[in-house]
Image (cartoon, rainbow, N blue to C red):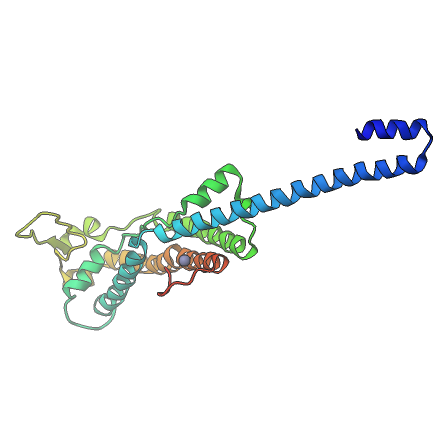
Length: 250
Ligand SMILES: [Zn+2]
């Protein structure tokens, strides 16, 4: 239709008509591009909203084991410091059952995962760019960085493990319980310590000192750093989605 009108205008040498038809064609092309662009922006925003909602669900689904374990490890470190007053310091009394229990598990440095499935998926498919919110992107980067640092420290800490009850059996014994279902001797308080023997065993004391030092790095870098960046990411996603929690989110 337009083509026949242009052909006729050309034949008639009606340059004004040619120019008008040309402008109409160009305007159509420009509008077409803009509509496509607007639609793809709209699609991207809808896609991003869906991803943020999935991210929030994944964040909320991270097991509470992680937070319980962090609290448990903080308690264990406090008992190791208390035991040190007896073993390294001049407090003359015997180790308490709780302090002995803490020593028997002083080599345990592991941590429940803080993995966020949707982020792993987006990284593996190269689609992390679909999340465009700047605060969320920054929080994700920070979380990746602290997880990377956490993994490095975790590897270093567990490179050499001083399991004290296995390495110094003469100072430890385990009470066999009346009901052994679920017996967990290293953790459940079954262990008994020979305080006097430990106090005069330099190798055991030095290995315990090593475990106590490691426990700081474990709590700060392995558990604390990622826990903090995870919470910051949760806050950023909440803010983006307008979610308010009654209680402080984990
Ligand atoms: Zn939330």
